[in-house]
Image (cartoon, rainbow, N blue to C red):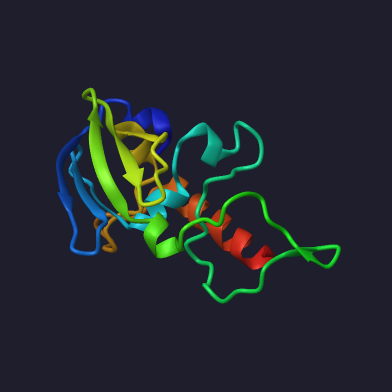
Length: 153
């Protein structure tokens, strides 16, 4: 299904999971379970999507804390203050409703400019891990893109 297919679908039930993620039952009967890393990696804000240049606030939830730092000309590359650890950055500190069409999440590192519309969330639904509620095509593409990025670093 394409994004247009989800224009009229809304969240009928939203619950917090013990792991800090979100489970949604949609008005079309579909079930989705969104992990914190998945939501952060798919932040819809212009900065994270790269609309304003290279994405700068996207957290690489697959990075290992002891991974070697990238070097340029023998120097470690530093581009500002040291970001918080990934486990802190992907904590959802607050969720605020945005009208009747979505929510804004505030992350552990203070990032809060992404508005997750119901249409966007339904479009990128990872499903719930069962055959009855599979991931959408967009979710499968997002996973493939994340795997490619992880393999190229």
